[in-house]
Image 1 (tube, rainbow, N blue to C red):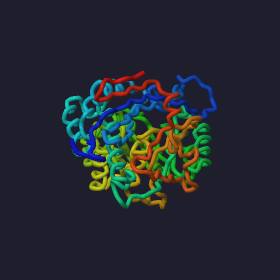
Image 2: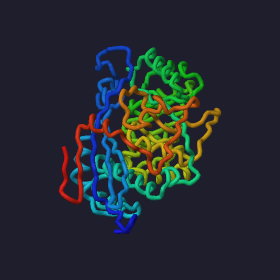
Image 3: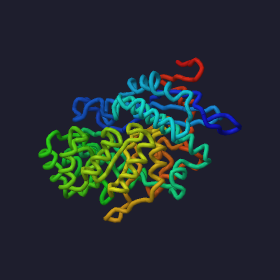
Image 4: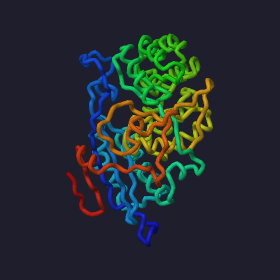
Length: 408
């Protein structure tokens, strides 16, 4: 083990797991039955969901450094919790927190378990926490730890939930997002009337559409996207099922030039391969899925090399939100052909009565009049959760240590 502060080692001595659930309000005006939706209840945009879950890890070293991470969760949390408790966290306990050792060892140890799924989500959480520790140890914000010339302010965009393809409801909530200061918007609708209403509501501001793999055949996807051509959508996200159908994505992107995806690709290799095939104009890895910041930095490099926009997917509110923001800030902003700034950080456009940390809901206090977010100035991620919120909203909490563990 390497030596660190005051002669103590940088050994990982404890990993705490927090599974929390916070209520939110999507401000839907209609009370229609959820069966009217065109998406299923496992989609995070469904009206059946009124709580958002977060699965977080807190890693502690022998020399007193703490790092926070977050795994992709929502309804997959039971499986990811089991992966953390029984496999991933025990692997890291007693090992060095140094970035150049434990992560590579874990990737090799678990390579037979797949390039995505609960094991990889769990690895992502620990990886984020170790980057947090490394930046704190260096006395730098995470973005400056990655790039000393990093920005301190980034461009946000509002990510709306699904409104059952109702044009009036879509327009109403986009107007609300405009009032909150957002200058770019993503909707989760797939019908022409709903998307037209969105374009009318936001004017010339950047507008993106996530259709959640709506179309199962390339011809159907092609005709549907062609019908939207005059709506000037910045990107159309995951237009085909399965989401990593490379051949179909490449054909669609060659035709339309605005295909995005990556949240549900299999690891760095799977996403990079589609970037190399020109199947995506916008690559959207998710830090809590793909392997944490270590993996995100590889996609960042591939984007620079292949001239593909890397705009991370980020439907989070905990450490993964700040990890994504810090990574975005490590690069310079990009101006689009129409003069607008490229949207950068995805913010779930939801109302929260309780906030886990000061950057939990930027549109409720941190968003500037220009639609930007000023990032934390303290070392590391800048994630400091409210202990009362953690206690009151924890579904499960477990402490794993090099000594016998305790939990509830």
